[in-house]
Image 1 (cartoon, helix red, strand yellow):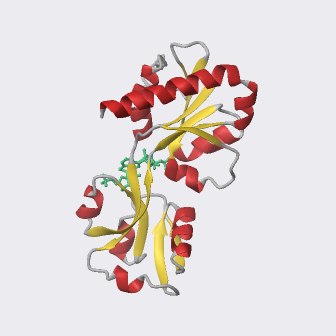
Image 2 (cartoon, rainbow, N blue to C red; image 1 turned 90 degrees about the horizontal axis):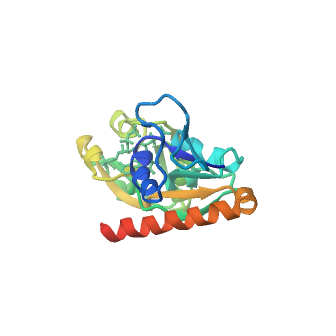
Length: 217
Ligand code: ATP
Ligand code: PRP
């Protein structure tokens, strides 16, 4: 049996057509079912419905052989122990520094300067400002990061942007791009050894489905 941990929400929505192209279809509607372990049309594959941030943990500990989650989440998962064999090219967005449109970020963001930064992505934020040789007071948030510069909680945020609608609606602007983000297929290293005969063909099928998907776009 292959167990695949799938991040629910946006990633699940974009990943299911890729799996369908590999003839893996959930046995029930994931949006309606309250079950967390979902059988598929293939007797050798089952899905775990998991929060995006928990996917690396399930795969690292071998509770799932494979997983699908965002590159942003993987960056924050610092305990390692994961293979990432395929970039699925879905749930694409960018990680940026953003602040209020009237804030003079260029003047503030000087080497040696100190800035209050709010983010859910603490590792990414730390690494980014360390590269800029800046000191930050890091405020950990779990969502609605855009509120932080509007309420005086922080000078800047580190968050994901896609269309830019959320920033615009809140009078914020992206002032620096940190990295582009997409979702990845991840694998447990022990599973890759013990279940190679089952996993390798599936990984190749998924990689082929990604290529077809990207060629179509
Ligand atoms: P959790 O509730 O587990 O903290 P979340 O609220 O971040 O997860 P989603 O909003 O579904 O869950 O985002 C999941 C992933 O989708 C993100 O980690 C990122 O990789 C990607 N993502 C987030 N926002 C966007 C966006 N606006 N456009 C495209 N992809 C996005
Ligand atoms: C994500 C992200 C931004 C928004 C950016 O939030 O944290 O707020 O999308 O997308 P846009 O540039 O297209 O507006 P999400 O919609 O996942 O809500 P969340 O705060 O619940 O994570």
